[in-house]
Length: 238
Ligand SMILES: Cc1cc2nc3c(=O)[nH]c(=O)nc-3n(C[C@H](O)[C@H](O)[C@H](O)COP(=O)(O)OP(=O)(O)OC[C@H]3O[C@@H](n4cnc5c(N)ncnc54)[C@H](O)[C@@H]3O)c2cc1C
Image 1 (tube, rainbow, N blue to C red):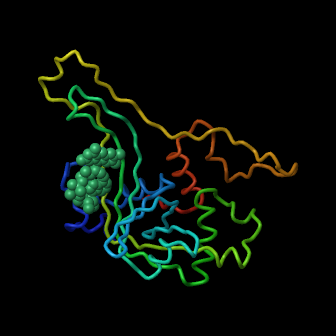
Image 2 (image 1 turned 180 degrees about the vertical axis):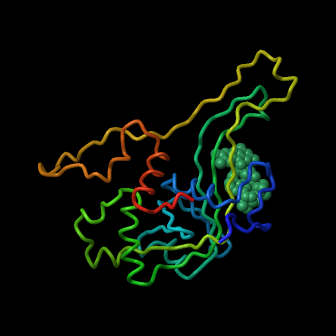
Image 3 (image 1 turned 90 degrees about the horizontal axis):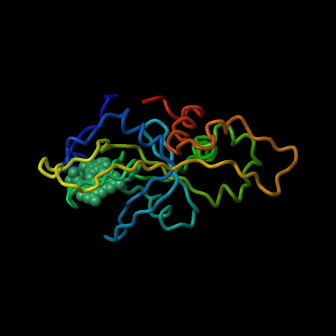
């Protein structure tokens, strides 16, 4: 498999093309450090874009939902989708409105969504949905009931093409504007994990599992997601 995704008109970054990347390592790193994706699809010409939890296994992206949901029922048939992930890293305030910007890491991934119909693959997806985020947790839980399994459907998409786009610089003003006495700055933005708040009805014998080790208060969510994926074997480091 080549190190980069194939580039066509569909995924070629045109605007600010120097920010575009197509190598799998960059795309995977952005995906693996996220918990939420936005899945876009069109039903009868009407675009919808649904935010949902997702995870990556190799070149496959998985997400799930109620078997009765419109998104799941529509995507089960095998339809084109575009999955996006975005990390907002900084607000960048320039000396002109035009040059205000943000730092970010984002991915757009394209492929065909389809239902996970195979029973074995569905069982793996049920565990994967828990273990990818909370390593080893599926085996500590009450097993899902037949009704729970029936009520839940999983969608999988093989990544056919993808692009990443990254801005990670400082203020970029017109040269003459640097002389102006206008406050310009960059503000870092972080989504941070808080302290664990044990359930008020916690069983006295319940202890925090080792799989929760990445979730230390004060760490950023993307660091935690990346470490959890590695720990659970859902990231090959590429
Ligand atoms: C948090 C955030 C805020 C942004 N704010 C603005 C804004 O205010 N104004 C603005 O113009 N743009 C903004 N962008 C950039 C925006 O996402 C688009 O890249 C840009 O608008 C160009 O869109 P386009 O359809 O013309 O891109 P084109 O370059 O024509 O898109 C062609 C292909 O390039 C790839 N591509 C384009 N954008 C991205 C992306 N962000 N991530 C991954 N792949 C991409 C896709 O494969 C796409 O199909 C922002 C991005 C982020 C993440």
